[in-house]
Length: 454
Ligand SMILES: *Cc1c(COP(=O)(O)O)cnc(C)c1O
Image 1 (tube, rainbow, N blue to C red):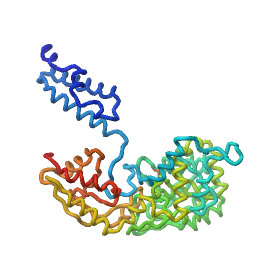
Image 2: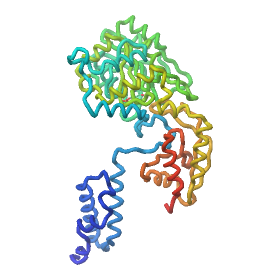
Image 3: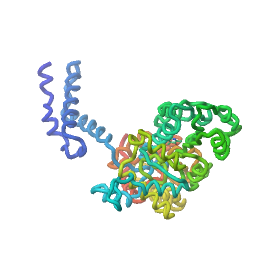
Image 4: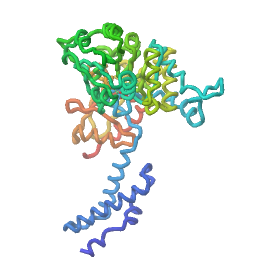
């Protein structure tokens, strides 16, 4: 046994024989060494359990696989071939590159984050961005925090801590990633009062629930699902009038926060301007907008926003200089009517002809082992919008004589910049709509290479 164990290489020999550490760029050497130790430990256990002594090649290959897998865990670029525009798992929307270059200039030096350049005194934190948002929304005041979950938490804590919040049973939703309306209300130390039924809630249901301890009547955009058929919800105007009559606040969580109707075929998202016309306070995500950084935005009536700003939670939830700057520049573009310069806008408005051409160029590049054809498909807005909000597109449907769709999808994920695809009815689909035009050449190279045995 000792003799057989001695045939195993040492950690150093295994490492020296393996691809140079440079091949695993981002991996700290300590991780690589630990992984080599683990591979040898496992080989030792296998030998002690009566197994044979593995070849050095096998050990190297095993180490290589494990290091490759570790490398895949790093946050890095991927190509989005799924056709989901605001893809939460892939970083939601791409940010306009020029804005990021400007942000690099800002953040690689000092900036006027909380400094009033005119007076030379300490100033408000990035006041212009709030003003730009208010102008776009048609509201009096705004506030920026880390994400929309934080915006809702802060809004309720500031307006309703220790008091009651009325929500329709049809809007007590889970958005995904653990955002559940009842839980957020509880975390804000408010008491949830459910009214109505799943499909129908009337103004009278809200009115009957109001008592001396009620602080807020809340509307939540169910985002990712829809109740159809025999349904009823009071209008924003009715809820606002009720809130004013009763001396309470009307708060709306919009989620996506669109400033324009989307070019999709399903029912449109509510617009921020429309919600801000009625709500004392409206919240939405900066990164579900057309290519914003991760942010949560509160906008509405000045005295209400003042309460949110004064709440101690704001200090814990406030946004950083990079995000505030990106948001400022994004809203400058929006107010200049230059939204067509934003990558997400361009993706959403890509013409069917251009999508067809790009998909055909992919199809023309197919190498050995790959078959494919271009056909109609549907892109989706994503980002918590309704599943039926789809955009007709042209996609490359891929197949292989010797690999399943799942194996093909894994093959494309293993490329230098992973290509993420979608599987639909057992076919692998590559939608050019969400692939940035400058990534087309790389996608074609992946396709030209073809696939070997799976
Ligand atoms: C997405 C969403 C949230 C959570 O927003 P994050 O920015 O992801 O924190 C909350 N409410 C609604 C209605 C949403 O759609």
